[in-house]
Amino acid sequence: MTTTARPIRVMIADDQMMVRQGFTVLLNTQPDIEVVGQAVDGADAVAKAAELGPDVVLMDIRMPGTGGIEATSVITASGSEAKVLVLTTFDLDEYVYEALRAGASGFLLKDASADQLAEAVRVVAAGEALLSPNITKRLITEFSRLGAPRAPSKARIAELTERETEVLALIAQGLSNAEIAARLVVAEQTVKTHVGRILVKLGLRDRTQAAVFAYETGLVRPAGY
Image (tube, rainbow, N blue to C red):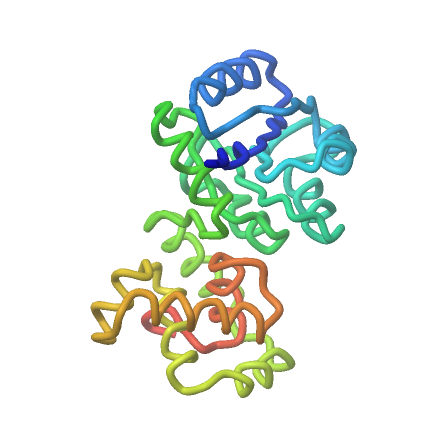
């Protein structure tokens, strides 16, 4: 007897009805994705996420009242298993860094194609980070502006093995598991194992938080700093 995998449950939070409805139509055409609800602002998103228990929340970064960043922070801090995929109009949005700090697992441009949208949902639902090269550059720029790393967190790096520390640094540079495996000349499954241990040891949700952690603690520094 064969069993069918449960579809990825998605909730869409955006103050524009056309965006919500458009994304709903696009995602519901995918056999492995189901839109289970919509929210009109951040406060509504927090309430609906608690009620519906989605796997992924598509979160508009700018909404009236409670915005996407605050809503993301509340959802990720609540113990919810939901991953937040932030929707933005510009890939170098000024709020990108704040949203990552709030616990977002990645970013998606609102003009993404249907295929890009569906794949982004799948990537984030699987526990991976959706961090484009442009977003990584934005992170580097922001950490350069902020200056010195946060010393109190540095001690946590000591919990990692030498190889895990190496893998963490490569994650922060935006490399995928396959690229890290090629760089270190190891199997991709070995890299996946290292990444899993890094997240557990540091108490992080995903690769995006790992990248933020690496920069904040000074493990990785932008060139020239």
